[in-house]
Image 1 (tube, rainbow, N blue to C red):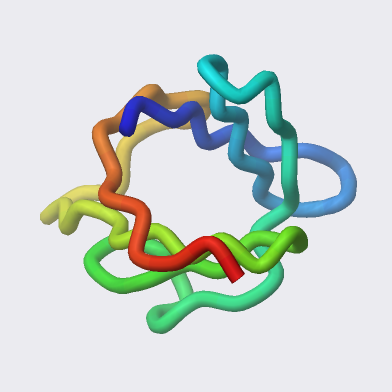
Image 2: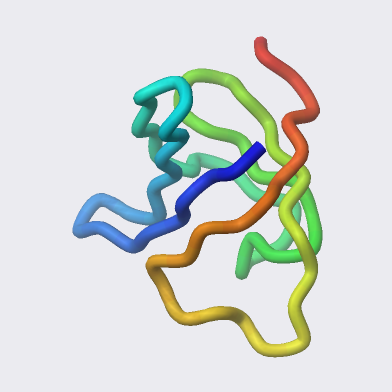
Amino acid sequence: MKITVRDTAKGMEVYVAKKDLEELIVEAEHPGIWGGWARLTNGWVFDMPAYDTPPALPVTIDARRLSTE
């Protein structure tokens, strides 16, 4: 699923264009969110791609949705 990750005053946010959804990242497996899972405020969990050097934000990535709690 294509998602856009951006940094806001409230924290890191994910935008899913196909769902017209904007949610904050509230929990992550790793401090930098890359290379593990990331949980959004609505309960969705995404498997985030790993990068040697974190990309500049905002960035559009292909992330797999693990759950829709």
